[in-house]
Image (cartoon, rainbow, N blue to C red; front, side, top):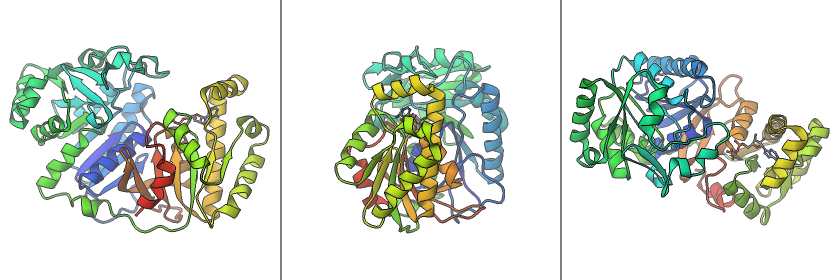
Length: 428
Ligand code: ADP
């Protein structure tokens, strides 16, 4: 296998989002969940590989270790350019992990300099004068200041990143970006000469991102959210080394019955559950009942689903309103209830695949991680986006070989209200 672009993402649904963007812009892309094994089978003509880690909130040393393991594998696979993907809200703590992982990858690639740009204008994330905005709000007033794990209390990314890295952080402002690729490349050289190691780059629309990718085309390492990926893919396509969107999005046909597993309690998923419940058989799991009899709950959910599978998609969900979630967390503990529900949803998915389900939508980042692990899925061929950020994928059987399964792994807050109804028609 010889891929061109090697990407390292710090979480699973973010990786899928990035992979979907690359495919939409013409690169045949495979996503690996965790660092691939050397003996893994690869589809011919893979042009980009996205390795999904779960490193966003790990201790920095461990995030660096995993990122370097992914990098070494990608380098062995022939990749010539590398991309470190993090969240478009720059989710990190004062210690990392965006800075430490960028530092480690700079060292590993032997690069003296890189750029970092979380802008994703399609989802309202823009960077201006180094400040990150979510819609019209600066990052620290966007709700992200209350995030339980990575509260973002400063929108100035130069200031946020500097304490995370041993290198000097600089800024490429919008005036330079608007002047185009050549001006950006010149500014990169100028900053490097004055000792800057990482430059935050402004971008307020997709044209800016295209110019950044073109201006940094010779850079071995880039860092950013998935917004910048379209520009990177466009550069490789212009060089004649990526297939083009009509080829890149093709997935092998997968038949079989259809199930939605929802473990996200995010607003978008709550709306999607409400819409599907009106139209198809739906089963809500009660976390207290799961705590009382876990295996019994799995068996009865599977027995409930089976008679419906031949006729129509079914929905199994633990999705609940915030008050109900809090009550469960108070009764069982937050970590214990989360792990219990993830385990049960994953076990149900496993048994339903044994019963013939081959098309699965999974809502929730953690839930998707638990389900893919239970199914033994480690490699995904990436297809067309259903909604921005959520492509259909088909698993590539590894050892021990299972059947190919079509999977849509949806980050909780992604997707339109009718996502669970409309997605099926886009699977091929
Ligand atoms: P999102 O992408 O929306 O963050 P995740 O799957 O990552 O979704 O996270 C949702 C978490 O909430 C999971 O750990 C899941 O097990 C847990 N959870 C799901 N339903 C409930 C519920 N009814 N009560 C408490 N916790 C829940």
